[in-house]
Image (cartoon, rainbow, N blue to C red):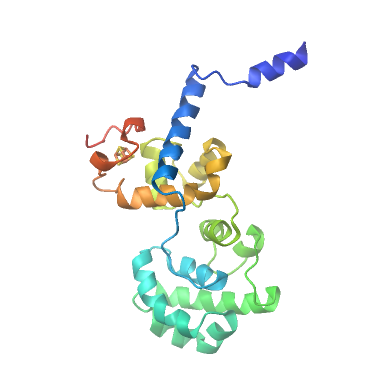
Length: 229
Ligand code: SF4
């Protein structure tokens, strides 16, 4: 009975180690969802183009720092055409408080030109086309795909990397390993918002220097040896 055998093999016994781990992960996301059913990113934007620009500007910078600069910038340049009209020098003036701004200004102007030339001024919704834009790597592409186009991908940033290794959800030495691991273990129904829940939990509770375990809603499910409770 090869067929019967294989379907039995696929069933996950809740009492098995794998079953218990799956139940633990399910519970982690169930609690994060209950605490924040409709999580939102913190980078301010007014359309898909300004989201892309904000994410490019946010590399090695805080969302708050980026928002401070982009509030005025997006009033004058919220389309690729207006960004090109502003020009590299004009853009530099707006973003000079953000780290690495000279390179970022160059990239934003170049990607605006490329969007007009190759995509009719629209932001493409596939990964390959996004990653072909200047200054856009896998993480930036994932953030845009997730927030703007509702693709259930998880962009692993420093907060997600730390939290994932601490809990652990997935232990990995590189961002790529963690992203691939999360892709496998996060239940489908949580994938769209997992990115935001994990970032926000890492940013505000499971902080790098001193995690605030005493107010952590998943503390009993966490196996981090450095837990503060
Ligand atoms: S218990 Fe502490 S270390 Fe574990 S996830 Fe919560 S805040 Fe982070």
